[in-house]
Image (cartoon, rainbow, N blue to C red; front, side, top):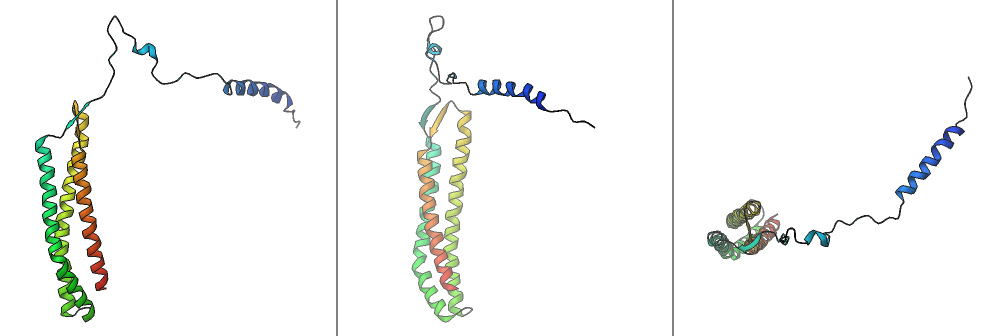
Length: 178
């Protein structure tokens, strides 16, 4: 068995590789993808219309009223929550001092649970606002105009802040009872 030298094959392949690498490393300028001025010139005397996208308009009154009603309900739930905070805090202090499974501890758990009821109501209202936002953003593609969803985004942020504040307080009260 004899081995043929690979040198002739090497001589045939190397120039091709060098040639192709020269093409790939060319310093020629590639065309840009930005719009060229010739594309904006009039065709048959008619100017080319600029694509400005859909018009942004205010949210319809019905949608705005729905958002406002959800925020108002969240504020009402938060008022109920706030009205029970002092009672729950004092019950937690008494329950912690008495120890687990004592009557005071059970009363404290009940008071924290009452706060959770208001908190759950606020979370449900936030979910309704989130659903409205998702629905409206999906509908934007089917309309000729886009609604300015700033009031909806502001409402969402306001209720998220309420939910976070309530959740933090409930967590702190629960941790004190442990």
